Image (cartoon, rainbow, N blue to C red; front, side, top):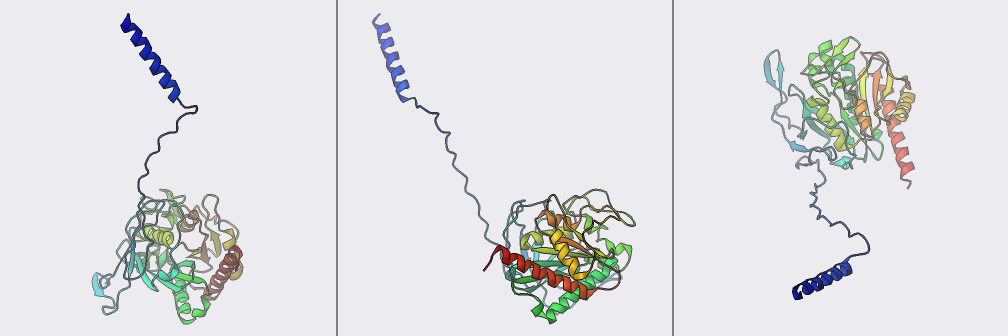
Length: 349
C-alpha cells in the first residue's frame, strides 16, 4: 500500500512539472544552419587573366582566356600558315557547350574590360570566331554579320565596313557607348562561298534555327527543310555567341541578313523589340512593324536574345549583293542616340 501511495505521489509531481513547462504558443521550428554560399569573383576579361563562373542557369558562363597557336588555313587540301608573325588575339572561350533557354539576368562587366579585338570561340570546323570592340562606354550594342555566311556574304561585308568606318571615325562612337562587332559568326559557311552550302556551318546546321527560344527539331527556310541541330545550342558558334551575350549583356543586338528587305523583331514570351525596330526602321527606311511570313522560323537568334530581356532585330538587307552601308550606319547611330536618351530618362543627371 505504501508503494502505491509513493507511485501516485510521483505521478502527480511529474504531471505538475509538465503542465508548468508547457508554452502558451506552438514552439518555433528549429533553425537549420545555412550552408556557406560560395562566392565567385567578378570576371575580368583582360588579356592576361582568366575569369570563371559556374555553369548554372543563374550564373554567368566560364571564360578561359588563352593565346591560340598560329592559325592555319586549309585550301584545296593544303594547309598553310596564316600571318605566322602576327601576334594572336586573346581568346575568351566558354567552357560549356550548351546554354539554357533562359537565364537570370546578371550584371555586365564594364565594357572597357573587353579587349579591342578578341576571339570568343571556334566554329564546328575549328575556325576562330572574332569580335572587335569600339568605345569604352557601359552601354553596348552588338552587331552580328554572317550568321548565314557565304549564302549572305554581303552581311559580312557590311559589318566589316562598319569596323573600318569606326576605326577611321571613332567620333561616331558616342560618349557612353560601346560597339561590339562580330563580322562572321558562321566562319565555316563563309569558307563555302556564295552558294546554298555556305548558309550552314561545318555540321551543315542552320545557325539561325539553333537558338533556345522556340527551337524545333524540324526547321525550314524558303528552299526547303534545314537542319536545326540536335538540340538548341548544339553548335559551337551559337553556344559561344550566346555565352558572350550573357557575359556582356548588350543593350541591343542587331543580326544582319539578306535579302527580305525589312526589320523583324526578336520576341519570346511577353518580351518584344518593337521600339528598337521603330528606331532602326525609321532611320534606315527598311519596312518594319510586320512579322516575317514567308515561312515559319524557329529557334532564331533574336528570339532567344529577347528571352534574355534584350531587344534584338533581324535586319534584312534589300539585296543579296550590296552592303547598303550608309543607311545601316544611320540605323546604328540612331540606336546609339535612342539608348543614351533612354538611359538619361531612367537615370537623370
